[in-house]
Length: 495
Ligand SMILES: Nc1ncnc2c1ncn2[C@@H]1O[C@H](COP(=O)(O)OP(=O)(O)OP(=O)(O)O)[C@@H](O)[C@H]1O
Ligand SMILES: [Mg+2]
Image 1 (cartoon, rainbow, N blue to C red):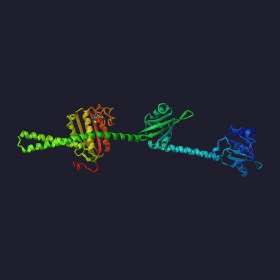
Image 2: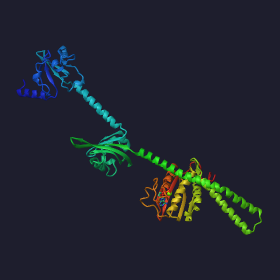
Image 3: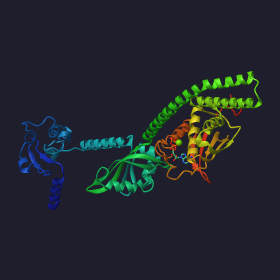
Image 4: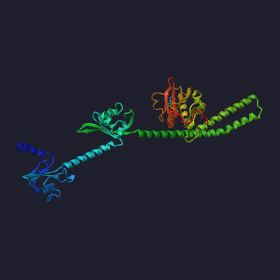
């Protein structure tokens, strides 16, 4: 027998149970009810027919668990639509017979059944799995960490971007390690401030993250602080890799520069070609008639040597015109083995007669056995022209220009060094000098396109270009270009 105390607690326990529990007679009258929800006072329930009070029916419901239990004489389960769960109605899922001397005296009817709860749990699990899947397969990286910085969410894109395995990331990696320097601290400071997106939120913040291999990757960050009961419990960040976007933007800029430069060179070329053609005709006349006089008249020795001088200079003029035409020839890019010594000398030949070069000493140290390079000759002309002009401008027309070519056959590269004795490159200029439109020259004297074009040309040829200050004085530009594989030095030279 149960003690009164025990009965009292059992009653309290039944009421504390947050589900409705009814005792129903075999003729569907409510005999007793617990009081889980303050909807209907039990006095109103007791004595009522369950189907009347809950479903407004004059007869028991079609899928009534009590009726089935009565017929089968054992517990019955009649699942009703889930929509009835947690509503004021009594969904009567489960009916359990109460026996007295072997006869069914009444039934316990409950508004829940274990399988339904399991179903709900399953649904919850499934929706959690869906969310997990969503985060895992997001194109952007998703990283979440607790307030100590310990990472607990690191999706597949994050594994790819940062180079850590999931185990490494969630095992020992701290969110501070995925930013260079004090990056994580900076992000938290901004997150807690009001400037970027509002309190606890950060929108399209551009920064860099640190990959496992030490690479710093530019990203755009969306982040927020997760709160629970007003307490910060975690941070979540969505990182979008900006490398591709930056590359496309750079390529666009480069194309723009190339177009501008091509336009500039194009119109210069047209002008030069026009002038050259016009000079060619009178030049032909001068040479022809000078030769005729030399051959047909018996001249005194002085006049003869004067005429020969005229012929020599006219010949030089013809060479200049020829080189100028060659230099400005508008061709489609034509990649073929070229001798870069020859390209350097052609550029020098054209520039030497300029006023700017009158007081510049040119020192040439060209490797006679320089291997050929597969390149577009016209682009090489433009490359050397820009670098030599820069050197002459930097020296303000006075100093020494040194041209040196060497080959490193182990690395399969030829190396061209163009140095000057100008003031050198100051620290604030060095990081920007290859940027388009960067110039320190006064307006009208420089557009800032020369070195960016040089950079593009060298890069398009699979080479590299760098600038440095010389130990003594002045600047030095070093270009390295790949040696032509098949064309062996000497074989094709001068063809
Ligand atoms: N040999 C050099 N010595 C010192 N500084 C140099 C030298 N060559 C280039 N620079 C610096 O780099 C800047 C960029 O050079 P770049 O050739 O791109 O443009 P620019 O010469 O100013 O103009 P542009 O070539 O379009 O006429 C120059 O303005 C100059 O400050
Ligand atoms: Mg320049």
